[in-house]
Image (cartoon, rainbow, N blue to C red; front, side, top):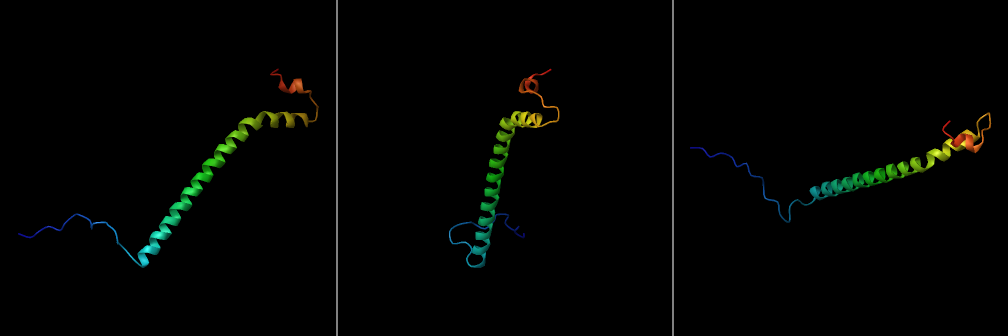
Length: 81
């Protein structure tokens, strides 16, 4: 009876790969760090943009309204009618 090949992987422990494999591991770590930094900066940028849009929308509308051709008063800009 023939034995089947083992499905178990090789044990991972200390020592592992050396030489060219270490350079590949370093590149992978650097790439993972870059991806993490891009995610952090993207999240920070989106949160900051959300706050800026939230607090800046009404002042922007007022500034644009004050610079329009028929100069409205501030009460006309703020009234809903």
